[in-house]
Image (cartoon, rainbow, N blue to C red; front, top):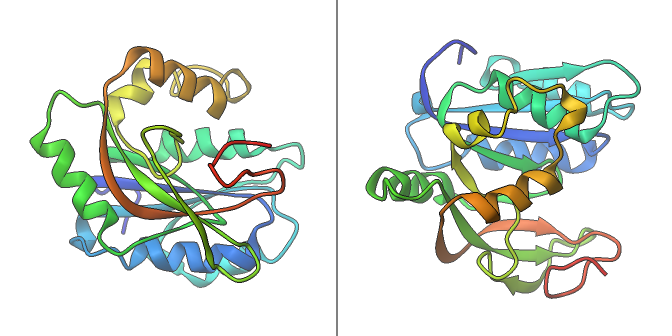
Length: 208
């Protein structure tokens, strides 16, 4: 899909040296049960030094690559760059080490079209083991919200200055805090998202 095409949903995969998981993530985003011409998948890469770029190139025009080559690039920089290039009415950031269930984008999109008062829609997620993909625990997206896997209206990012500020003035943590304070986020108690457990991650989804 052309980067200039109008779409309903933009999925922004954020990557840095997660090549071992990246292809699985891309596949899960492309395989969504959703009309293909109405959603785009962007892969924003922060100067990865592993084989991530080879994976990105292998998908050709199925995805929109957003490649940062500055060695000092951070995940935050990649997230901002990807969001700025996204053309969807709705945007969803996704970590490269995570993956989606098949109907996730479709259901979230329907929710936002039918609930105009909501600025976004969150879902439950499974914490999964990074070595086996075994499910560790289901976590409530309402009690333990994360920006990754939450679908937002593009206006949220416009209001938060993602398109005007320099990349280093924006962070995922600050964004999540401001969303909690200023916006109405709907909630679906369905575990559509698979969140890879990191070191220090407790079973309840909080940092240890």
